Length: 268
Image (cartoon, rainbow, N blue to C red; front, side, top):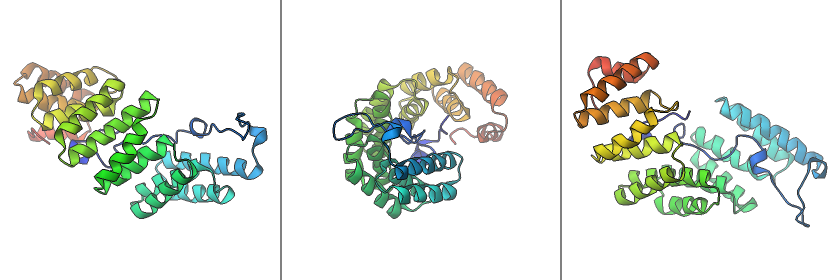
């Protein structure tokens, strides 16, 4: 499960759901000039080498080894500079390595290769949001939201909502986060983001409804249970506080949230 953090930290790269790159297949459907599907036998040797290197880069990226992933993706691009997925993944790796200018260059190049890529629009929007470039970020995120795939639209709505919250656009942020949740109620980061936003804006009853549903699923974690405790405390709901406290200690005894309990913290 994606790590869920408090709202001020929600725009960190490690927290957010980045679209694509679970493997090449989801992004690789292409057509020839005759609108026929490209099969393995149609691909050049250079494209096949590029895909092999891309798969390795993806594996290293997900394993938390961005430098090795970068080396692999560079070799993929050297084999075939037109493979959009490789150029876009290079952008994500640069984001993780805190090289925003290099990341931006990669995303712009990826969009030159495939202007309609929802994955690139989403991740480029996230990068721009992290840099405080809200107008540009909104443009790319709204383009991603136009995708017909609701799961991907939900993730882009969530990022847009968090960007808006960061920029004190409270009403817009709430609307975007509600859209994200409505499109994909099973998306734990979207549920947590909405509940946490409502908590930060003192809408405690509404916040409790969303975090309670999340905490009743197998996607609950220490952060969501701690948010549930904080909300219940604000509502004077001692029974829920004790129930969630017991779950937190039992399921996540080594978490920082248990340390908060032991130290008597209430709002960390």
